[in-house]
Image (cartoon, rainbow, N blue to C red):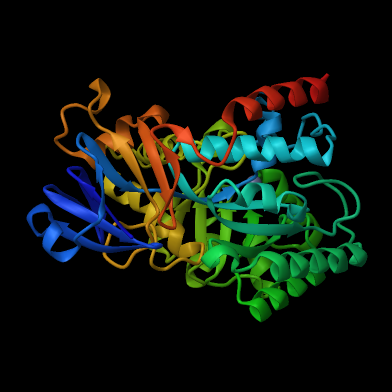
Length: 441
Ligand SMILES: [Zn+2]
């Protein structure tokens, strides 16, 4: 059975976005199989189920290259507990995340998935320790996922916290076992809607032994890897104190940098490190909203010019990629003192096409023939999106979460007319409130 989305404004994207009108988007199974003029539709694809998208735009869904769904638990708290950006660096001055049960944890994760879908995300990389505990719940949302199991082996202290870094090799072994199990159970699940990745926590949380083991497994399984890199100035100081070098050079020395690496943050980084990362063609996940909250910003223009791919991520307490996209554009314009660059077209590409590619889906993140049918319908007939002189510019500058009406992943609707189909929105919101209240009290 084919589905044809008709009467909408189809936003295609190759090197830049283009808007097609009077065309139908034809979907069969998991793919966009045609974009055809309305007059040709019946001839070429008779009997297709017609979806009327009058007044709507068809955009690619977002690829969130870095998030932690369970940290919805810290919303309203961790945003305002940023570490110092100037010496001394005593560590992160904040409360620990309170312990909650496995079942409670599952609800907080679903809250993250719910917000993601409502804000137009179709693909996300979830980074955490112990994903096996909730992989089934989260995949039922219908989102496309890379589940990246995280490991660290630093015995005493936490990231950004000073002190001698000592490794507990048993934690490396346990981490490798978790990744291997997750890979056996979930990699390639449901037409490869779910794949598995591997995550080192941070340069000052992972010893050389741990980095080498992770890299070996990554190559063996041929999967994406990730790490929080140059996230905090305290981390940079830690690596200098322990290894006499900078975080990115430390990773280079331990064979960790590669083209399938997604380096999250990259904001406390010198030019030499930016060039090294570019040389390896790694992806930078520009986590703009959390960066702004921490009072920091990566040098995205330079990282891009040095050869990095630029993707975008939400990180903690926030799954709204519309805001991430907009904030990233604004931050770069302020940082570079340039009022025209980056252009919305470019930023839209970071948040969609680039993210898909970096997360391992080459034919995704674009509305083109042969691409994965991962898309969103956005209601344009609203004051803040009118007039529609340039709908990509409108979307990046003015888009809001409630503009997203429907979301499709792998050719299947997961939100239709604002109803998230596989998650019980009211139940999740009520339960999440109860869980957080109890946990933080
Ligand atoms: Zn993170």
